[in-house]
Length: 492
Ligand code: FAD
Image 1: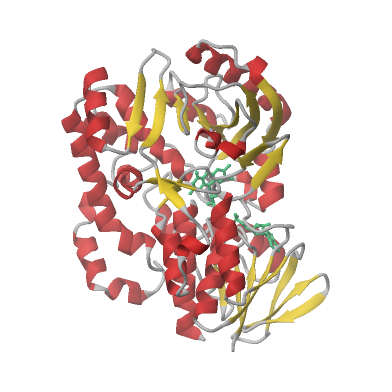
Image 2: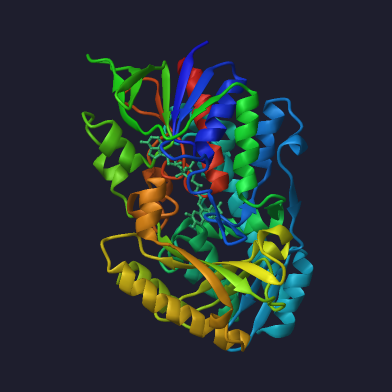
């Protein structure tokens, strides 16, 4: 059997290992950390369990597909529920909205409480579905970097419909024209942050994202987000994949000559031979640390990075009945918040705050009469800002904002705290500048400016994960694994 080495046990590395193992390859995964999952990590403090990274699970079919390919019953590994309520929104002017999964109910609530109408919501989501229709096969499910991808009939059809993807105005411009009420435009602008972008700069094509949530649904794994990792690692191990933890790969080695080909990887000065190597690392560090002698594709790897995050994990004493699983407390001036992040590279004094409370559904995630709050704001990627000072200021502003809107002093309920910031995201997960999603999607060409899933310099070297095509977030990272496994088949 041809030997494959996957570097990194992030979600895309694990999924690549499963796909290739199903195809009959002998797969080993080398992970620098002591556990699998990368950004998809969990944290346990004083009786509280937190999902440390992603908190929203969409497109579960991409996970299910891995169990199907392996001929296994997914329920033996991993279970999840479809959420009836997607998110609660809180505005500074007192408006509160609950986004129900039942779209008619949500549209009616918008019509009742705001200047916008149910018809506006319907029209917007129809557009969102059209963008998905035109883009998903071309931009998400295939490599953009091989001629053959462009010879498919559905690619050609998409090319003819290119005008429909709304690429030539910003998301804010589009949403301003869809919705009479600026607060509803703001609600849908927020989806740009799902891949770390700025709605005042990013093309309105990003309006495809609400389709993922409102059409395909929002979900919660029964064991928390980390359950995705545990389930997939168990599947991989059952298929014979070997995981090696605390094994930081130092170099990818290849033959010399005109057509270099992958030979082995170096870990702790030991050589591990492989016919195929797949790097799940951030592409920036793959070039900087593991492929030092290769000319770097500077233009591709130096694109603007997506935003990062500042997260407070708070164990809270008490129950907050106003809050649900996902909650958003909007900034009063959204544009000013994005200017702070993208122009001034700092944190605004009134950031939009996201609070995820998994214990609302998973009771064992917090002690009795307590809740586990994952409190996150979007912040710029790390460029050496004075984070200690910014964190202190942001913490005070967040506490003031939530206490004001909920009319309750939340500070006194915080019984334990952990913090994750751009510096620790970079050091813990190897994400350049602590960005959450690789490159930003702040311009129309972003999809074409992500690194391909294969190397054009070294034969049998491939790349998966959020920093390469098709982009960041769990669903896209899983798709990168699918593209890689298709590409491997073509050359080995
Ligand atoms: P990564 O998770 O980046 O893992 C890479 C792995 O490589 C790590 O385990 C690392 O230790 C390992 N590694 C690095 N260097 C080496 C080396 N030299 N040798 C061996 N191993 C090495 N996505 C969503 O879909 N929904 C969300 O709600 C969401 N929220 C997020 C919130 C936060 C705070 C963060 C941080 C991310 C969030 N994301 C979300 C994004 C999502 O987590 C990522 O897009 C996805 O997990 C990236 O997976 P990946 O396969 O690229 O690997």
